[in-house]
Length: 320
Image 1 (cartoon, one colour):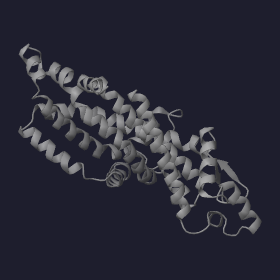
Image 2 (cartoon, rainbow, N blue to C red; image 1 turned 45 degrees about the horizontal axis):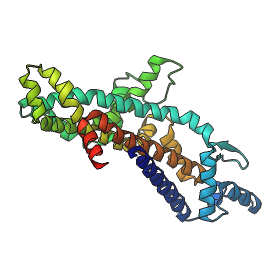
Image 3 (cartoon, rainbow, N blue to C red; image 1 turned 120 degrees about the horizontal axis):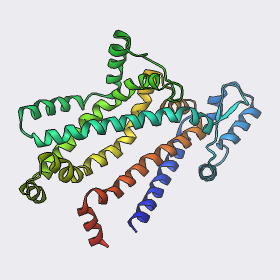
Image 4 (cartoon, rainbow, N blue to C red; image 1 turned 180 degrees about the vertical axis):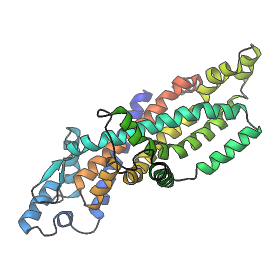
């Protein structure tokens, strides 16, 4: 029943997000067709308005778009020459894998580094090592991803010439060159995430170490490593999972800038170009897909709580 309720909430959130984007796009000043083709004839502009759907009222436009979207039709992207259009799905097929890989690599790398570091700092709470690393992480967490990207691009790529400063090599072409082209964007996005994740996990580990079940496990003579990673880590991971899911949205936003700095030409750059050119259908579909990824991730994390912490299952059972 909880799953059904969560799915219902997901549908409602997606409706408000996508309909809100429709209203915001309509409130933009000027004519979208005229922006796309400033020298088009009246007949050509009327044809573009019909294809965009801007010749209809906002409700008719939205439900037409929604019907097409649910059937997998994301609309058309208008080229600079009148009459030339490209399907949004075709452009996504080229740009989405790059952005998705950046997000996957970034989140995986951030969590893999943060978990052992956060558990270690929680266990060593109050020590000199903990104070030095925690204070450093506090400073690092405030550094925006674009600043990290610019620094890494200048120092690693241009000064040391270890990797190319721009460009992307697909994984299917060359595995080694692929990771060389993706390492700087991933590290740029990961730096602040690692600092945030580590500090949160450290705090939760400190709290969990005070629980009675940890004291009982310690009294049984179990090793510290076993207690930390078998009994302490799971209940301490709830906040980390929540923040990781929330940061999927910030990763998409950060990818816009990072893709520009490193010339990756992913979904972020595609979305910015679509907004600037008033590509209604492309913007609507891209925002909807982004919202689906973001909201779905948060719902899945919420459902995983009961797997990581038995106390959550007990609370759900009590509520029922």
